[in-house]
Image 1 (cartoon, rainbow, N blue to C red):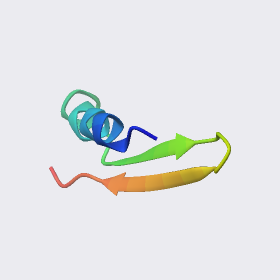
Image 2: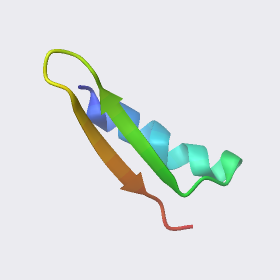
Image 3: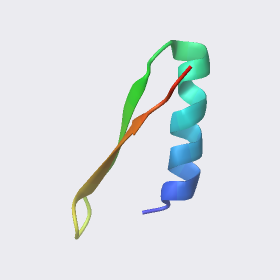
Length: 40
């Protein structure tokens, strides 16, 4: 999972959407997820 790129996007989205919590999900061979909480 290219988490660095996705995490950067996830941190930037709240600036325009107002969302404080996001998930990065990978459903490939090894399913995994990461929860990211952004403090405004």
